[in-house]
Image 1: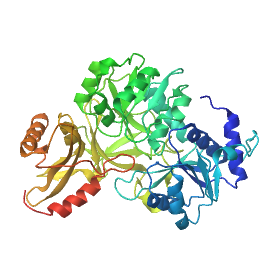
Image 2: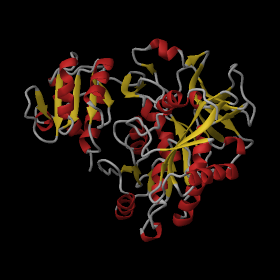
Image 3: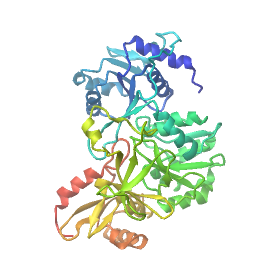
Image 4: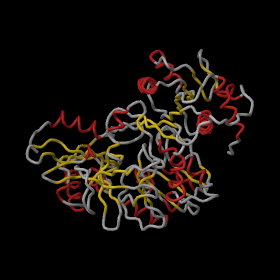
Amino acid sequence: FFFKQKTAYEISLGLVGSEMCIRDRVMLILYRRVEYWVCMLALHRIGALPIPSPSLLTPHDIEFRVNFAHVKAAIVEDSVADRVAAALPKCPTLSLLVQVGAEPKADGWLGFEPLLASADASFPRTPDSPGGRDPMVIFFSSGTTGMPKMVLHSFTYPLGHYTTAAYWHDLEPGDLHLTLSDTGWAKSVWGKFYGQWLAGAAVFVWDFRGKFDPAELLQIIAEHKVTTFCAPPTVYRFLVRQDLKSFDLSHLRHCVTAGELLNESVFRDWQTATGLPIYEGYGQTETCLQIATFRCMNPKPGSLGKPCPGWDLVLMDDEGRPCEPGVEGEICIRLKEGGVLGLFQGYLDEPERTAKVIIDGFYHTGDKAWVDEDGYYWFMGRTDDLIKSSGYRVGPFEVESVLVAHDAVIEAAVTGVPDPVRGQAIKATVVLAPGFEPSDELTQKLQAWVKAETAPYKYPRIIEYVAELPKTISGKIKRAEIRQRDLEKYGAREM
């Protein structure tokens, strides 16, 4: 598909004709379909603020976000319209409703195609047209540590993603890139929008609904000759269970991952089958890519890599002092005059929340890591997720990455539970792979596995088996919810 400026101009004028103004807030709930890109570009052009939102939102979720963000308009899939309509009576600011797909039958809704046809093809820029440090887009955070926050980015944000695309994704003109991400989250614009176009590459869109089929994904990569690919480690764990040699992946030349730690066994299995290493990266909704392993570097499986150009990172201890190599600290970004390209402008309408993370010239990410003698960063976890047991500080990702390397484990979440002797005992909540059943024998095997693969003090003294882990709608594990359940279940009993 080739975008014509005419299309974006038409939808821009259609929105303006519907009384959409600069800095009005617009919720987008669209699948991976071309209308998502058209609407984003149109809203950027008129200076309205798109709020990309996931398609799994419930009426309650929609009500919260609309009222919290004072949303004026919603452009949504036909399959989502009923949920928006259910929330509408409690959303007084929501005055413009646009349905994409089937023509709307309910009163008060506009169809996308009629809106597109309601304007001509000219939309001239003026001296007042938005750009630079003007607000551009709002993302809701995933809410792993509390209620979601509204993260505001300016028109400089796309430039920050040039590093993401050109250096981490290793894109060049003529490449075809696939990022496996829903359009409702910031990760989608990491791999589906700004940086890829700035690098001269094309974006491949696979509009699947629900859970992905690993065999189908591999077939699509092969059939459409995708050249670079980004997916979370969980996806790679499913892919390496397939017969990779049966797919023609000869056009695929570069693979990256982010979102959680990549365990070494998956890295090795993928590289053995495809000849391609997997390059890891790290960032947040509030930032672009901060830390990454680039193609010019030697990957260390499980490491995030090194700081990206333009990001002055400092690991700080609890007293605000820089950490020596090998000592864990919080990842902090040194601010500079004129701003850091790709860093958010703040949490919209919440200055007190912003003030808690912008302190004395640094943005505090809330993420813990340590750096080795070669300058590679190793992720420990969120500040709130770290476990303090018998004087040791244990990051959940360290233990989780060992557990998921076992054939019996498909997913794991590690938390600390109250313990009168140790302070906290390490607990693993585990989703088993097909063909395995919970048992005391399996628990002992998993505990022995962790002891053998990492420092023995990190082994989980408690293992609980569940059908699925609680997650945010962006797919991130809700450890806070697990911790609360553990507190109610275990209290301070002896282990």
